[in-house]
Image (cartoon, rainbow, N blue to C red):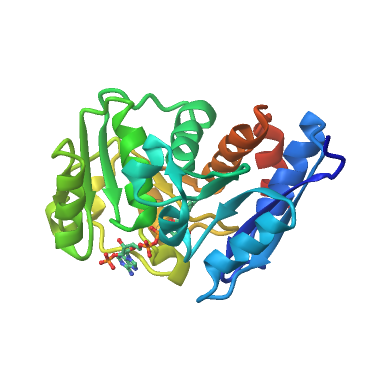
Length: 270
Ligand code: NDP
């Protein structure tokens, strides 16, 4: 019999800014789960040791963020199909012998788009900007929704082509300059917004009725969302995705689905 409160944590470097402890504390209160969730600053060269230490001290599972998602993928002794497809792990589940790696980023994005924003993805023309870890994690779940087209545009064009090949050419890779017709949905999965920069996207990808979605979130509109708004697109940031990917991880660990709406609203108001 175990009497200890179950421990979870998010590992990253840096990590102090993370909203995950607030989100999981709210989920735990809402669903009466006896658990705590902390932040752990893992040394850049010491991710595997930090995870091992956490497991020894009763850790039951972990989230993993920048820059450790690929290391978490390599460390996992088993992986879910969606983690395999993503090539990155953002959720670890510990049990006695096994270290199971999962990836909930794509499920989080799709839940935010479809449940919270009411978008139907089937038959839509989607442009995904970026070919890093976040982009790769969401391609499989987006394809599962049967869009008409999914184009990946990236600054380093070869990486967009590599990703397209990885997904069996169900997607098309190109450079930013080649994406210059209107899309129903344009997702910014580049790290440009983190640096306050605009990815070199053509304004021609936006029209009235386009949803521009930035995976980054913040109080002010990112340069990408400002440009989209100037060209009559609707805009949404990635706060909903953050909460939804956390809810999916919470479900994987605890078997209970929290209600995300009040948590998104309280973070938005904070
Ligand atoms: P990576 O470092 O793996 O990838 C970065 C990508 O951004 C690459 O495609 C890179 O292009 C591109 N890029 C970087 N700077 C620029 C620029 N100035 N102009 C154009 N392209 C640029 O990062 P991640 O994929 O892990 O993260 C991307 C974003 O997604 C971040 O903003 C992150 O915060 C966000 N995110 C949000 C989540 C959420 O829950 N809301 C979850 C996960 C990520 P190149 O290949 O040419 O270098």
